Length: 135
Image (cartoon, rainbow, N blue to C red):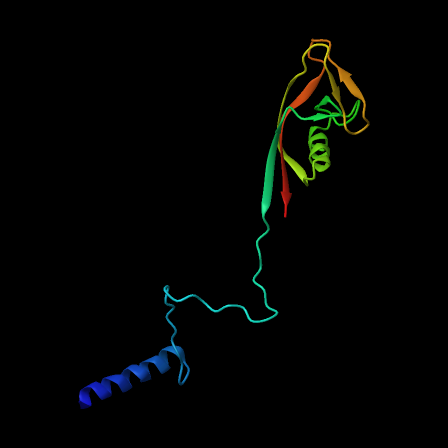
């Protein structure tokens, strides 16, 4: 059929004009066929995996972890980062604290000083800390 042949040539000419290239290919991906696999020596980038773990009532040396990093230096983020690093994690991403029970002792990781509770809110301990590491 001469009409069909003319339509095919018209379609091919239209494709050349649309793509600006003679002999251009238009590839339509088929979702049922897997894509190309990397060749030898080429690896796909692997997104970093993030691991988290929550420690409830964390203790070091049998003592609760104080909210402050060192005596006279109440740096909560530095304290939870130090605890997480002792546990093999990169950093602390969240924490929760509470007053220490009367006569209990907390430890400050920065200088290993302690805070002994008198029951009037003079000591605060880390009640929960969530640590994170990239792996």
